[in-house]
Length: 357
Ligand SMILES: Cc1ncc(COP(=O)(O)O)c(C=O)c1O
Image (tube, rainbow, N blue to C red; front, side):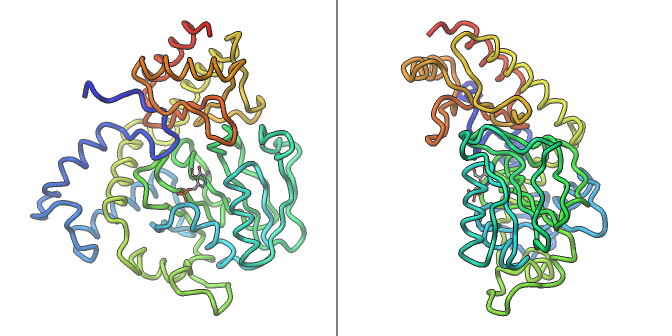
């Protein structure tokens, strides 16, 4: 335990200790199955129970209505950049709030027609649209795609966009961090490796009108159709069994800690304290504009790269990891996902208070 550092990685990222302990215990023998979790057939009743439990917990957390269902896929959020246009068809509208949404749009354009309708690229991706000035999808758009939390730039939507078109959301880096009415979405997807589990599993909450009816071209491979995956209970091919187990354990931990409301409070307290410390620090300037500040990834610059390097060195000495900003923004970034303990954020705030350049 002494060797574990304050983990501010952007993803894969910190996981709750009880999840690691449950994984450790299940590696050797899982729940009376006579074999470890990595050794169970995905077709066995023992693993079916693991997948059902994970689905049920996510269903409980988000109060998922009968109109929607949960899928567990692979290929990361990046595969969804392709699956969305393959399944929703041409004519998607995209809001560009940073690298991942630009990549989603670029991928869609390879597959079909898709239009960027708003971008904060010019200002260095410091903001998402303000709630009172939301970009509208053009008439006839087949879907509106946005990125709820921009991991690299540290910006986040604090509202669900109004959409005339079916709403599609990349929620990779703030999934399970606050309550959301999932009935507003045609699809939300999240690579699990930030807030929800390990790398290698993508969680989808999808409206059955899109998962049970295929609307794309007949040339789309079967494996890339939501319908194929939904009809096979996410087991058209061998799923990431261990990843699904771990996501279920994370969902259990979230349930045990006040559910999504509990996570929202925890996130607001941690992020609020860290932003207050940064705002008060003479050497620090936040990257995101006020209304767009992320509760998950806090990004900032110091006055010089030399100060930033000195701060990173001091942080490493103080037992911290993962604070270097993404190469496209530079500076510093603290990813303070659900599993990052308030004590780790307090340690970072203490270090900032002592740091004079
Ligand atoms: C918001 C967001 N979308 C998409 C991705 C890409 O995810 P993956 O590597 O799982 O494809 C990331 C990865 O950091 C992300 O933060």
